[in-house]
Length: 404
Length: 43
Ligand code: HEM
Image (tube, rainbow over all chains, first blue to last red; front, side, top):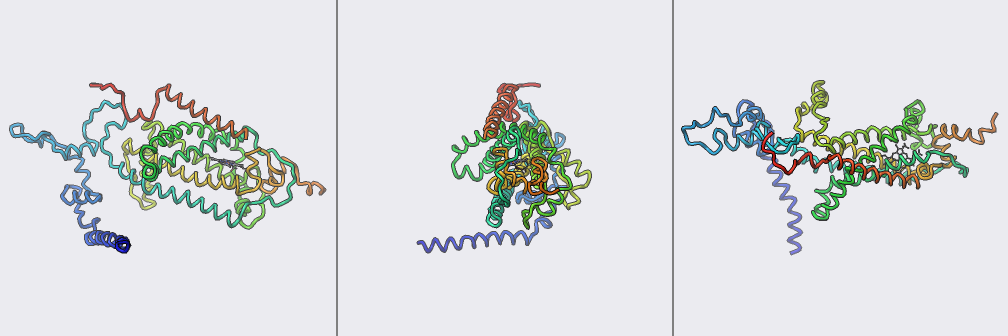
């Protein structure tokens, strides 16, 4: 019996592979993009219906959009009428799909009269497929890279002898701003990921009921803690922007790879070029996440994509990369779908960047955490990592002081 | 540590406050997709 199961299991993929192969063969014998097409924009034919059933595109949308029941083409009143008068069932569904139906509803919301919306399927597939794959590779890959970096490079130690003296690096209000930004970001990240992976991972693992409670809490936290994040983002921008204007020191710092590669400590002011990159990533990506988050929090109130797409199409931008024009105009729901995808993608990218930041601010570098923990750093740490700033705050190195 | 704890407290206060404000001014994401229980027959 067990041998049978083994043989069956071994054969299963082969069988599946074969059947998938024969399907693929059928498609290559009759390449759908060319042969079944006969997708003539002027007439809608059986071929078009068959193509649609295969999930392929057809070119007859324009005429189908108009085949929504023409009263003039209706059966004469003297003849026997169908229940829909001049329209057939198919006419009615086409009217829904192409937004031609005259829909009356008690709901007074922007999207209420869109009953069928093609873009929804693409979005749903993308959200539960590629988006989650991107999330896993991006976040998993970053963690793996950091683990590898730790194994190869180890903790970045304070190289010189410690002085026992400390320098004030961040005042209490600066640390307050940082920690409000950090704690809200972590909460938003966790609750956001739970929402993203709910249907595909958590419901199958823990069941609908358990996930329902978790989802309700996560939604509340995500929607409301977002305000703390936005306020902290503005706060941090105001207090640190002066220290984050790029200058020539940054070029030298970057040219030396920040000393991470090849050792050495290129001079740096209060923030080195790497930190400035983190700062601007947090401000710009965090700002974008906030903007699109707000558009999701107040649905249909501000539509950010349609106009941008039409503007880009006008420039011919999609063509530069060999793409077809971006969709325009967008249904209200499509605006929300694009906002969701953008919000999620940018959040994933920023989360990956923040993983690296958290690593360097904690286990990755000796002496770094104190800056945000106590607010004071070891003088030697400051001289190694922020030599220009350290000299401003504590004067030249004692050894250098002796020189005339 | 004190800065961190204050920040967490501030975060909780802001979140609860935001929720209260949105409740009072009667704004909710759910409302954008539903309408009142009363059926309006015209307008
Ligand atoms: C939760 C764990 C975190 C730890 C342990 C941590 C640690 C640190 C430390 C030690 C510094 C000071 C570096 C220095 O002395 O130069 C710092 C700075 C900073 N942190 Fe964090 N941080 C965390 C999370 C975050 C998050 C989630 C964000 C933003 C979303 C963030 C944004 C910043 C920014 C913009 C700076 C100033 C620029 C920089 O040093 O890169 N941090 N962080």
